[in-house]
Image 1 (tube, helix red, strand yellow):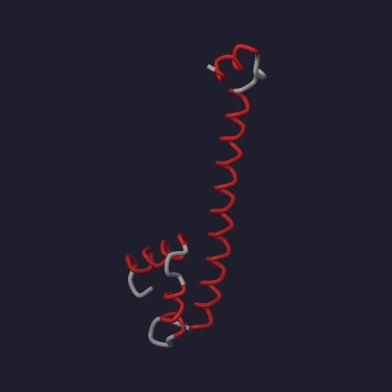
Image 2: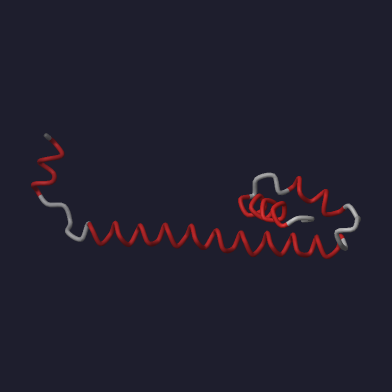
Length: 87
């Protein structure tokens, strides 16, 4: 988190949960970047908030596609559909 570009890349890795455990070790190192305790609190809160948002987005997409699919198939199957299936 020393530069803006690195911090954006780190937050993207945390959001996609790709290698986020490797980012925890540098946060624990005390240096000129800040307090490790605040880093851990930020890290954990960002994971919780980003996962909640991502999971809710997936659920919303699935429900929207389900609604579209049920609206398109408004009519039940008829005899012609069964005959076409057997041919």
